[in-house]
Length: 343
Image 1: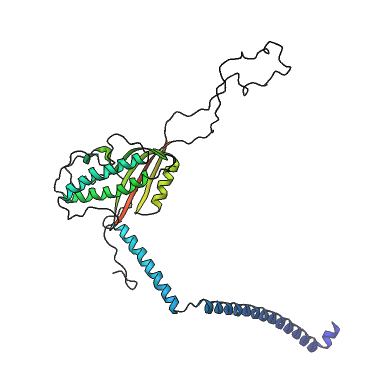
Image 2: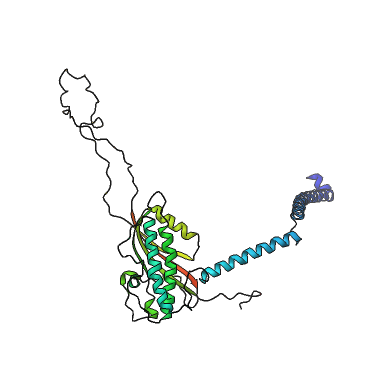
């Protein structure tokens, strides 16, 4: 303390120099760390540059050719999806210029659609009720023309859609097992009420779809809903959904309900009381007395014992499935946007 009082200037300068050295040391350490980071960034940039040079991202002749091929593929896919949503070239419809168009549609429903669906059900071992018309029972008998082309167009479109949907459903059975055993009913929306209000349609063929469940938007999206009810195994339902998921047609599932089919359960045969399975001992513990059966043992029977067949505890169960599907199409072609602006 005495030395500091005698030489205050010297000790003050010394303390200042020590403080400056500490500050410069800290700054040098920070600069070194930043330099290392910059070096790492530089090395990374160098590697990225070499990789870019190797992959040639700039528009070379080969890259331009690949880009054109990719663009063509995307344009074809876009056209395909538009065609499906507009139902152009997808549904097998009768030309509207056909002579007596409405009668031709009804004749195709009766002699083409209903007959082919019955044949498909028989071929796939699916049980159907007598006279099954697959949603068109009013057109399975005597038909007549009312000169209503709008009715013909609506019926023909429903027929074409159901032709695809029911075909996929009946084809969901495996070659070695009947995954779908029975078709209960096919129902469609009643289009007759809009284009031919005076017609009386069987209530068994039609149903009404809740608007909250539908994707229908007036003036933009048209939909056609159908209700399918059938009996089968879960594998059949899974096969049907897998077929729809391939999106050959714009069909989406709106609702699925499953009920266990009431059937008599299979019970494994119970062994008779005298069988070895129910006896605590195969032979008496102390041997069999000569000429006499052991006390409490059953009397021997001359009839052969029933052969026991073991069955699985959990067996495949039939279920009743109720499915609502909806076919979606655009009400009118989509206008393409140009230069980021709506046309």
